[in-house]
Image 1 (cartoon, helix red, strand yellow):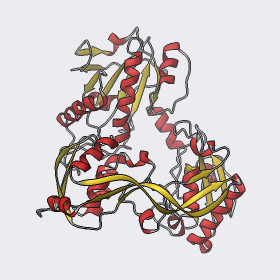
Image 2 (cartoon, one colour; image 1 turned 180 degrees about the vertical axis):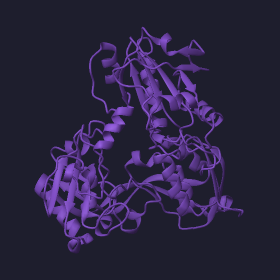
Image 3 (cartoon, one colour; image 1 turned 30 degrees about the vertical axis):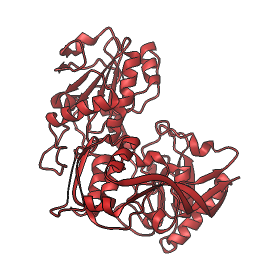
Image 4 (cartoon, one colour; image 1 turned 45 degrees about the vertical axis):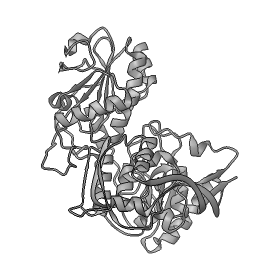
Length: 469
Protein backbone atom coordinates (compact mmCIF):
# COMPACT_ATOMS: atom_id res chain seq x y z
CA UNK A 1 0.00 0.00 0.00
CA UNK A 2 1.39 3.41 -0.90
CA UNK A 3 2.02 5.59 2.15
CA UNK A 4 -0.36 8.31 0.94
CA UNK A 5 -3.20 5.80 0.86
CA UNK A 6 -2.17 4.44 4.24
CA UNK A 7 -2.25 7.84 5.89
CA UNK A 8 -5.72 8.55 4.53
CA UNK A 9 -7.18 5.17 5.50
CA UNK A 10 -5.48 5.13 8.92
CA UNK A 11 -7.01 8.49 9.81
CA UNK A 12 -10.46 7.38 8.69
CA UNK A 13 -10.24 4.23 10.79
CA UNK A 14 -9.21 6.10 13.92
CA UNK A 15 -11.47 9.13 13.62
CA UNK A 16 -14.61 7.72 12.08
CA UNK A 17 -14.39 3.98 12.58
CA UNK A 18 -14.95 1.34 9.97
CA UNK A 19 -18.41 0.17 10.99
CA UNK A 20 -20.67 2.88 9.59
CA UNK A 21 -20.93 4.83 12.83
CA UNK A 22 -23.78 7.02 11.64
CA UNK A 23 -26.17 4.24 10.69
CA UNK A 24 -29.48 4.48 12.57
CA UNK A 25 -32.46 2.20 12.90
CA UNK A 26 -35.84 3.62 11.89
CA UNK A 27 -37.71 1.60 14.54
CA UNK A 28 -37.89 2.85 18.12
CA UNK A 29 -37.40 -0.20 20.32
CA UNK A 30 -34.46 1.38 22.09
CA UNK A 31 -34.23 2.72 25.67
CA UNK A 32 -36.07 6.02 26.22
CA UNK A 33 -35.24 8.79 28.66
CA UNK A 34 -37.78 9.08 31.49
CA UNK A 35 -39.06 5.52 31.06
CA UNK A 36 -38.12 2.27 32.82
CA UNK A 37 -35.12 0.49 31.37
CA UNK A 38 -36.31 -2.22 28.93
CA UNK A 39 -35.48 -5.80 29.90
CA UNK A 40 -31.96 -6.92 29.08
CA UNK A 41 -29.61 -9.64 30.21
CA UNK A 42 -25.82 -9.65 30.54
CA UNK A 43 -23.86 -12.89 30.48
CA UNK A 44 -20.19 -13.67 30.98
CA UNK A 45 -19.56 -10.47 32.94
CA UNK A 46 -15.91 -9.84 33.73
CA UNK A 47 -14.75 -8.12 36.95
CA UNK A 48 -18.13 -8.60 38.65
CA UNK A 49 -19.49 -10.77 41.45
CA UNK A 50 -22.09 -12.36 39.16
CA UNK A 51 -21.49 -13.78 35.69
CA UNK A 52 -25.14 -13.36 34.67
CA UNK A 53 -27.38 -10.39 35.51
CA UNK A 54 -30.84 -9.28 34.35
CA UNK A 55 -32.01 -5.67 34.33
CA UNK A 56 -34.48 -6.21 37.20
CA UNK A 57 -31.63 -7.54 39.36
CA UNK A 58 -30.03 -4.09 39.24
CA UNK A 59 -32.91 -2.15 40.82
CA UNK A 60 -32.17 -0.57 44.18
CA UNK A 61 -28.86 0.95 43.09
CA UNK A 62 -28.14 3.39 40.24
CA UNK A 63 -26.15 1.99 37.34
CA UNK A 64 -24.56 3.10 34.09
CA UNK A 65 -24.25 1.20 30.81
CA UNK A 66 -21.21 2.50 28.93
CA UNK A 67 -21.23 1.31 25.31
CA UNK A 68 -17.92 1.56 23.47
CA UNK A 69 -16.19 0.21 20.37
CA UNK A 70 -12.59 -0.52 19.39
CA UNK A 71 -13.15 1.47 16.18
CA UNK A 72 -13.45 4.81 18.00
CA UNK A 73 -10.17 5.99 19.52
CA UNK A 74 -12.01 8.53 21.69
CA UNK A 75 -14.15 5.78 23.20
CA UNK A 76 -11.10 3.61 23.82
CA UNK A 77 -9.16 6.43 25.49
CA UNK A 78 -12.19 7.32 27.64
CA UNK A 79 -12.04 3.90 29.33
CA UNK A 80 -9.28 5.18 31.59
CA UNK A 81 -11.53 7.97 32.92
CA UNK A 82 -14.47 5.57 33.28
CA UNK A 83 -12.22 3.27 35.32
CA UNK A 84 -11.35 6.16 37.68
CA UNK A 85 -15.05 6.93 38.16
CA UNK A 86 -15.72 3.25 38.84
CA UNK A 87 -13.04 3.10 41.54
CA UNK A 88 -14.39 6.25 43.21
CA UNK A 89 -18.13 5.51 43.04
CA UNK A 90 -18.40 1.70 42.85
CA UNK A 91 -20.08 1.51 46.27
CA UNK A 92 -22.81 3.94 45.14
CA UNK A 93 -23.27 3.27 41.43
CA UNK A 94 -22.33 0.33 39.21
CA UNK A 95 -20.77 0.99 35.81
CA UNK A 96 -20.86 -1.72 33.12
CA UNK A 97 -18.76 -1.54 29.96
CA UNK A 98 -20.58 -3.10 27.01
CA UNK A 99 -19.02 -3.68 23.61
CA UNK A 100 -19.53 -5.81 20.54
CA UNK A 101 -19.78 -5.74 16.77
CA UNK A 102 -21.94 -2.90 15.49
CA UNK A 103 -24.73 -3.10 12.94
CA UNK A 104 -23.41 -3.72 9.46
CA UNK A 105 -19.97 -4.87 10.61
CA UNK A 106 -18.50 -7.22 8.03
CA UNK A 107 -15.10 -8.79 7.59
CA UNK A 108 -15.45 -8.05 3.87
CA UNK A 109 -14.80 -4.38 4.61
CA UNK A 110 -11.27 -3.04 4.87
CA UNK A 111 -9.57 -3.74 8.19
CA UNK A 112 -5.95 -3.99 9.24
CA UNK A 113 -4.87 -7.47 10.16
CA UNK A 114 -5.68 -7.95 13.83
CA UNK A 115 -8.50 -5.39 13.79
CA UNK A 116 -11.24 -7.44 12.13
CA UNK A 117 -14.71 -7.37 13.81
CA UNK A 118 -14.81 -10.36 16.14
CA UNK A 119 -15.35 -10.79 19.87
CA UNK A 120 -12.00 -12.59 20.00
CA UNK A 121 -10.22 -9.45 18.78
CA UNK A 122 -12.27 -7.33 21.19
CA UNK A 123 -11.20 -9.51 24.11
CA UNK A 124 -7.53 -9.54 23.08
CA UNK A 125 -7.44 -5.76 22.84
CA UNK A 126 -9.34 -5.33 26.11
CA UNK A 127 -6.85 -7.54 27.99
CA UNK A 128 -4.05 -5.23 26.86
CA UNK A 129 -6.07 -2.13 27.71
CA UNK A 130 -6.68 -3.60 31.19
CA UNK A 131 -2.93 -3.62 31.75
CA UNK A 132 -2.30 -0.21 30.17
CA UNK A 133 -5.13 1.62 31.97
CA UNK A 134 -5.44 -0.66 35.04
CA UNK A 135 -9.07 -1.38 34.16
CA UNK A 136 -11.25 -3.14 36.70
CA UNK A 137 -14.72 -2.14 35.47
CA UNK A 138 -17.42 -4.81 35.04
CA UNK A 139 -17.31 -5.61 31.33
CA UNK A 140 -19.44 -7.50 28.81
CA UNK A 141 -18.75 -8.43 25.17
CA UNK A 142 -22.07 -9.15 23.48
CA UNK A 143 -22.86 -7.93 19.95
CA UNK A 144 -26.60 -8.68 20.25
CA UNK A 145 -26.90 -6.71 23.49
CA UNK A 146 -24.74 -3.88 22.09
CA UNK A 147 -27.01 -3.50 19.07
CA UNK A 148 -30.16 -3.80 21.19
CA UNK A 149 -29.21 -0.86 23.42
CA UNK A 150 -27.74 1.66 20.97
CA UNK A 151 -29.86 3.42 18.31
CA UNK A 152 -26.83 4.27 16.18
CA UNK A 153 -23.32 2.88 16.00
CA UNK A 154 -21.87 6.15 17.34
CA UNK A 155 -19.89 5.64 20.56
CA UNK A 156 -19.47 6.27 23.42
CA UNK A 157 -23.18 5.85 24.19
CA UNK A 158 -23.93 6.22 27.89
CA UNK A 159 -27.19 5.16 29.58
CA UNK A 160 -27.65 6.45 33.15
CA UNK A 161 -30.33 4.64 35.18
CA UNK A 162 -31.55 5.59 38.68
CA UNK A 163 -32.12 3.21 41.59
CA UNK A 164 -35.75 2.65 40.49
CA UNK A 165 -34.68 1.45 37.04
CA UNK A 166 -35.76 4.66 35.27
CA UNK A 167 -33.50 6.08 32.56
CA UNK A 168 -32.31 9.59 33.49
CA UNK A 169 -30.09 10.29 30.46
CA UNK A 170 -28.73 8.77 27.26
CA UNK A 171 -25.70 10.71 26.11
CA UNK A 172 -22.11 10.36 24.89
CA UNK A 173 -20.04 11.51 27.87
CA UNK A 174 -19.73 10.29 31.45
CA UNK A 175 -18.22 12.49 34.14
CA UNK A 176 -18.28 13.00 37.88
CA UNK A 177 -20.92 15.75 37.77
CA UNK A 178 -23.39 13.44 36.05
CA UNK A 179 -22.77 10.64 38.56
CA UNK A 180 -23.25 12.98 41.52
CA UNK A 181 -26.50 14.30 40.04
CA UNK A 182 -27.69 10.73 39.36
CA UNK A 183 -27.03 9.79 42.98
CA UNK A 184 -28.71 12.91 44.38
CA UNK A 185 -31.70 12.76 42.03
CA UNK A 186 -30.92 16.19 40.57
CA UNK A 187 -31.18 17.15 36.90
CA UNK A 188 -28.02 17.73 34.87
CA UNK A 189 -26.91 18.90 31.43
CA UNK A 190 -26.32 16.31 28.70
CA UNK A 191 -26.63 15.94 24.95
CA UNK A 192 -29.59 13.69 24.14
CA UNK A 193 -28.31 10.70 22.13
CA UNK A 194 -31.41 8.54 22.58
CA UNK A 195 -33.42 7.35 19.58
CA UNK A 196 -35.85 10.26 19.98
CA UNK A 197 -32.99 12.71 20.44
CA UNK A 198 -31.36 11.55 17.22
CA UNK A 199 -34.67 11.83 15.38
CA UNK A 200 -35.09 15.36 16.71
CA UNK A 201 -31.61 16.26 15.47
CA UNK A 202 -32.71 15.20 11.98
CA UNK A 203 -35.41 17.87 12.06
CA UNK A 204 -32.77 20.59 12.41
CA UNK A 205 -29.81 19.31 10.46
CA UNK A 206 -27.20 21.64 9.08
CA UNK A 207 -26.22 21.35 5.42
CA UNK A 208 -23.47 23.14 3.53
CA UNK A 209 -25.85 23.36 0.58
CA UNK A 210 -27.63 26.26 2.31
CA UNK A 211 -26.11 29.19 4.26
CA UNK A 212 -25.92 29.11 8.04
CA UNK A 213 -29.09 30.51 9.71
CA UNK A 214 -31.05 30.73 6.45
CA UNK A 215 -34.46 28.98 6.35
CA UNK A 216 -33.81 27.40 9.74
CA UNK A 217 -30.49 25.89 8.64
CA UNK A 218 -28.67 25.69 11.95
CA UNK A 219 -30.83 28.30 13.69
CA UNK A 220 -33.36 31.10 13.11
CA UNK A 221 -33.83 32.33 9.52
CA UNK A 222 -32.33 35.62 8.31
CA UNK A 223 -32.39 37.22 4.88
CA UNK A 224 -29.16 38.59 3.38
CA UNK A 225 -27.15 38.83 0.17
CA UNK A 226 -23.62 39.46 1.52
CA UNK A 227 -22.55 38.89 5.11
CA UNK A 228 -20.13 37.72 7.75
CA UNK A 229 -21.30 36.49 11.15
CA UNK A 230 -19.59 35.56 14.40
CA UNK A 231 -21.58 33.65 16.99
CA UNK A 232 -20.84 31.71 20.14
CA UNK A 233 -21.51 28.00 19.55
CA UNK A 234 -24.42 27.48 21.96
CA UNK A 235 -24.63 24.15 23.89
CA UNK A 236 -28.18 23.41 22.68
CA UNK A 237 -27.84 24.66 19.10
CA UNK A 238 -28.05 22.15 16.23
CA UNK A 239 -24.88 20.29 15.34
CA UNK A 240 -22.73 22.24 12.87
CA UNK A 241 -19.62 20.93 11.04
CA UNK A 242 -16.18 22.31 11.72
CA UNK A 243 -15.02 25.11 9.46
CA UNK A 244 -13.08 23.83 6.38
CA UNK A 245 -9.39 23.07 6.86
CA UNK A 246 -8.26 25.45 4.14
CA UNK A 247 -9.30 28.79 2.69
CA UNK A 248 -8.98 27.21 -0.75
CA UNK A 249 -12.01 25.04 0.09
CA UNK A 250 -14.21 28.16 0.02
CA UNK A 251 -12.84 29.35 -3.33
CA UNK A 252 -14.32 26.46 -5.34
CA UNK A 253 -17.46 24.35 -5.63
CA UNK A 254 -16.99 20.78 -4.44
CA UNK A 255 -18.58 18.00 -2.38
CA UNK A 256 -17.90 19.81 0.92
CA UNK A 257 -19.30 23.23 0.11
CA UNK A 258 -19.99 26.11 -2.22
CA UNK A 259 -17.68 28.71 -3.69
CA UNK A 260 -17.78 31.90 -1.66
CA UNK A 261 -19.10 30.21 1.50
CA UNK A 262 -16.76 29.75 4.46
CA UNK A 263 -18.48 28.68 7.65
CA UNK A 264 -18.37 26.31 10.59
CA UNK A 265 -17.21 26.17 14.22
CA UNK A 266 -13.71 26.19 15.70
CA UNK A 267 -11.61 27.48 18.56
CA UNK A 268 -10.36 31.04 18.29
CA UNK A 269 -6.73 29.99 17.79
CA UNK A 270 -7.68 27.78 14.83
CA UNK A 271 -9.73 30.61 13.28
CA UNK A 272 -6.70 32.90 13.47
CA UNK A 273 -4.53 30.26 11.78
CA UNK A 274 -7.10 29.87 9.00
CA UNK A 275 -7.23 33.66 8.52
CA UNK A 276 -3.46 34.28 8.49
CA UNK A 277 -1.90 31.02 7.26
CA UNK A 278 -4.80 29.84 5.11
CA UNK A 279 -5.18 26.51 6.92
CA UNK A 280 -6.11 25.18 10.35
CA UNK A 281 -5.81 21.95 12.28
CA UNK A 282 -2.08 21.27 12.01
CA UNK A 283 -1.58 19.41 15.28
CA UNK A 284 2.13 18.74 14.79
CA UNK A 285 1.96 15.21 13.34
CA UNK A 286 5.05 14.58 11.26
CA UNK A 287 3.16 13.76 8.07
CA UNK A 288 1.62 17.23 8.03
CA UNK A 289 4.33 19.32 6.46
CA UNK A 290 2.97 22.87 6.32
CA UNK A 291 5.37 24.01 9.01
CA UNK A 292 8.24 22.24 7.23
CA UNK A 293 7.64 23.51 3.70
CA UNK A 294 6.34 26.95 4.60
CA UNK A 295 8.21 27.33 7.88
CA UNK A 296 5.02 27.94 9.88
CA UNK A 297 4.57 27.03 13.54
CA UNK A 298 1.60 24.91 14.51
CA UNK A 299 0.54 27.01 17.54
CA UNK A 300 -0.21 30.70 18.03
CA UNK A 301 1.79 32.79 20.50
CA UNK A 302 -0.38 34.70 22.97
CA UNK A 303 0.83 37.97 24.51
CA UNK A 304 -2.42 38.93 26.20
CA UNK A 305 -3.33 40.08 29.71
CA UNK A 306 -6.37 37.79 29.53
CA UNK A 307 -6.15 34.73 27.28
CA UNK A 308 -9.22 32.84 28.57
CA UNK A 309 -10.93 33.02 25.17
CA UNK A 310 -8.12 30.84 23.82
CA UNK A 311 -7.66 28.45 26.72
CA UNK A 312 -10.88 27.89 28.68
CA UNK A 313 -12.35 25.53 26.08
CA UNK A 314 -15.01 22.91 26.81
CA UNK A 315 -16.17 20.83 23.84
CA UNK A 316 -19.22 19.45 25.66
CA UNK A 317 -20.69 22.78 26.75
CA UNK A 318 -19.09 24.48 23.70
CA UNK A 319 -17.52 27.16 25.87
CA UNK A 320 -15.19 29.38 23.79
CA UNK A 321 -16.12 27.65 20.55
CA UNK A 322 -17.23 30.06 17.82
CA UNK A 323 -19.28 29.76 14.65
CA UNK A 324 -17.99 31.91 11.82
CA UNK A 325 -19.92 32.38 8.58
CA UNK A 326 -18.52 34.36 5.67
CA UNK A 327 -20.46 34.53 2.40
CA UNK A 328 -19.18 36.56 -0.55
CA UNK A 329 -20.10 36.68 -4.25
CA UNK A 330 -18.44 33.87 -6.17
CA UNK A 331 -16.48 36.29 -8.35
CA UNK A 332 -14.80 37.68 -5.18
CA UNK A 333 -14.10 34.25 -3.66
CA UNK A 334 -10.32 34.13 -4.01
CA UNK A 335 -8.14 32.82 -1.14
CA UNK A 336 -6.48 36.22 -0.69
CA UNK A 337 -9.79 38.10 -0.50
CA UNK A 338 -11.33 35.56 1.89
CA UNK A 339 -8.30 35.68 4.21
CA UNK A 340 -8.26 39.50 4.25
CA UNK A 341 -11.98 39.61 5.00
CA UNK A 342 -11.62 37.04 7.77
CA UNK A 343 -8.67 38.98 9.26
CA UNK A 344 -10.76 42.14 9.23
CA UNK A 345 -13.68 40.38 10.93
CA UNK A 346 -11.43 38.96 13.66
CA UNK A 347 -9.97 42.41 14.28
CA UNK A 348 -13.43 44.02 14.41
CA UNK A 349 -14.89 41.40 16.71
CA UNK A 350 -12.03 40.73 19.14
CA UNK A 351 -9.79 43.83 18.67
CA UNK A 352 -6.55 41.89 19.14
CA UNK A 353 -3.40 42.94 17.33
CA UNK A 354 -1.91 40.25 15.09
CA UNK A 355 1.52 39.90 13.50
CA UNK A 356 3.40 37.10 11.76
CA UNK A 357 6.91 37.04 13.18
CA UNK A 358 10.02 34.91 12.79
CA UNK A 359 10.86 33.40 16.17
CA UNK A 360 13.03 30.60 17.53
CA UNK A 361 10.60 28.05 18.97
CA UNK A 362 10.75 24.50 20.37
CA UNK A 363 9.86 21.34 18.47
CA UNK A 364 10.47 17.59 18.64
CA UNK A 365 13.34 16.70 16.31
CA UNK A 366 13.71 13.18 14.89
CA UNK A 367 17.03 12.04 13.42
CA UNK A 368 18.97 8.79 13.00
CA UNK A 369 22.35 7.50 11.91
CA UNK A 370 23.19 5.81 8.60
CA UNK A 371 24.15 2.64 10.47
CA UNK A 372 20.81 2.48 12.30
CA UNK A 373 18.90 3.16 9.09
CA UNK A 374 20.81 0.42 7.29
CA UNK A 375 19.58 -2.11 9.86
CA UNK A 376 15.95 -1.08 9.21
CA UNK A 377 16.21 -0.88 5.41
CA UNK A 378 13.45 -2.91 3.77
CA UNK A 379 14.05 -6.36 2.34
CA UNK A 380 11.34 -5.66 -0.24
CA UNK A 381 7.91 -7.13 -0.69
CA UNK A 382 4.45 -5.56 -0.68
CA UNK A 383 3.90 -2.53 1.52
CA UNK A 384 1.87 -3.63 4.55
CA UNK A 385 0.91 -2.54 8.03
CA UNK A 386 -0.26 -4.90 10.74
CA UNK A 387 -1.70 -3.21 13.84
CA UNK A 388 -4.57 -3.23 16.29
CA UNK A 389 -4.24 0.61 16.14
CA UNK A 390 -3.64 0.96 19.88
CA UNK A 391 -1.08 -1.49 21.33
CA UNK A 392 1.04 -3.03 18.55
CA UNK A 393 2.34 -2.14 15.12
CA UNK A 394 4.55 -3.49 12.35
CA UNK A 395 5.45 -2.31 8.84
CA UNK A 396 6.80 -3.88 5.70
CA UNK A 397 8.38 -1.74 2.96
CA UNK A 398 7.15 1.66 4.14
CA UNK A 399 8.56 5.18 4.20
CA UNK A 400 10.01 6.62 7.39
CA UNK A 401 7.31 9.32 7.32
CA UNK A 402 4.63 6.67 7.01
CA UNK A 403 5.95 4.78 10.02
CA UNK A 404 6.40 7.86 12.20
CA UNK A 405 3.00 9.23 11.20
CA UNK A 406 1.26 6.07 12.39
CA UNK A 407 3.37 5.85 15.54
CA UNK A 408 2.57 9.41 16.67
CA UNK A 409 -0.99 9.62 15.40
CA UNK A 410 -2.76 9.36 18.77
CA UNK A 411 -0.36 11.48 20.83
CA UNK A 412 0.60 14.25 18.38
CA UNK A 413 -2.56 16.36 18.94
CA UNK A 414 -1.85 16.47 22.68
CA UNK A 415 1.83 17.39 22.42
CA UNK A 416 1.18 20.86 20.97
CA UNK A 417 4.77 21.11 19.70
CA UNK A 418 5.55 20.13 16.10
CA UNK A 419 7.20 16.76 15.48
CA UNK A 420 9.59 17.14 12.55
CA UNK A 421 11.33 14.29 10.74
CA UNK A 422 14.75 15.66 9.82
CA UNK A 423 16.06 12.42 8.32
CA UNK A 424 17.19 13.24 4.78
CA UNK A 425 17.41 9.60 3.66
CA UNK A 426 14.18 8.56 1.95
CA UNK A 427 14.83 4.81 2.13
CA UNK A 428 11.92 2.48 2.81
CA UNK A 429 12.11 0.43 5.99
CA UNK A 430 10.76 -2.69 7.71
CA UNK A 431 9.60 -2.55 11.34
CA UNK A 432 9.08 -5.92 13.08
CA UNK A 433 6.00 -6.41 15.26
CA UNK A 434 6.39 -4.04 18.18
CA UNK A 435 4.24 -3.91 21.31
CA UNK A 436 3.81 -0.29 22.35
CA UNK A 437 1.15 1.78 24.09
CA UNK A 438 0.29 4.21 21.29
CA UNK A 439 -1.38 6.53 23.82
CA UNK A 440 1.92 7.00 25.70
CA UNK A 441 4.47 9.47 24.29
CA UNK A 442 7.22 8.25 26.62
CA UNK A 443 6.65 4.64 25.54
CA UNK A 444 6.84 5.69 21.88
CA UNK A 445 10.08 7.57 22.45
CA UNK A 446 11.56 4.50 24.13
CA UNK A 447 10.63 2.31 21.15
CA UNK A 448 12.11 4.79 18.68
CA UNK A 449 15.39 4.95 20.57
CA UNK A 450 15.58 1.16 20.71
CA UNK A 451 15.29 1.17 16.90
CA UNK A 452 18.12 3.66 16.47
CA UNK A 453 16.14 6.88 16.08
CA UNK A 454 16.93 9.98 18.10
CA UNK A 455 14.06 12.17 19.32
CA UNK A 456 14.82 15.28 21.31
CA UNK A 457 13.64 18.81 21.95
CA UNK A 458 15.29 21.38 19.71
CA UNK A 459 14.70 24.94 18.57
CA UNK A 460 14.72 26.71 15.24
CA UNK A 461 13.13 29.69 13.53
CA UNK A 462 9.48 29.49 12.50
CA UNK A 463 6.92 31.90 11.15
CA UNK A 464 4.42 32.23 13.97
CA UNK A 465 1.16 34.12 14.54
CA UNK A 466 1.58 36.47 17.53
CA UNK A 467 -1.66 37.73 19.09
CA UNK A 468 -1.40 40.66 21.53
CA UNK A 469 -3.45 43.40 23.15
